[in-house]
Image 1 (tube, helix red, strand yellow):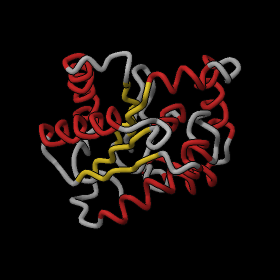
Image 2: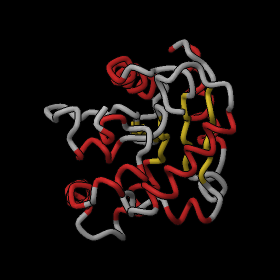
Image 3: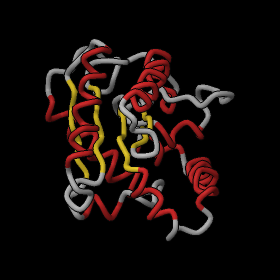
Length: 194
């Protein structure tokens, strides 16, 4: 069950779907060169939020960022805050990202943390809703991926042509047969003609 399908009561189902997405899409397709190592080492935390209200979700974002701040990267590299019940509407989610950015500024976390965004209905500005390029940021639920800037910089030094990663990812998804995409993204309605 993905976002927008009604209130989710099974946190384990949300957690399981998020792990499958991370393992099969993000790591399995190699969309993020930073993800595989911390995942294998058990330094990626997936936290499920059952909140619906934006102010409660924002409080949870703060809690998870404080936890990252207080925990060495050798123990906890990154956190995915998965929103099980809230932000079913992508526009609401996208606008909330401005609030999260303001939060980073207010807590003086700019340059320390950044937030990557994922949503079942993700749509890049200027792209059609059914463009395969959007799939790079599609996940089964709305996700706030809390990242350490220092870790990104360290890995970026080891990756050739970092700027070309998004283009390579889009090309990979555009070249995939529809049936393969349907298997990887069973929650994306437009892949099934809906």
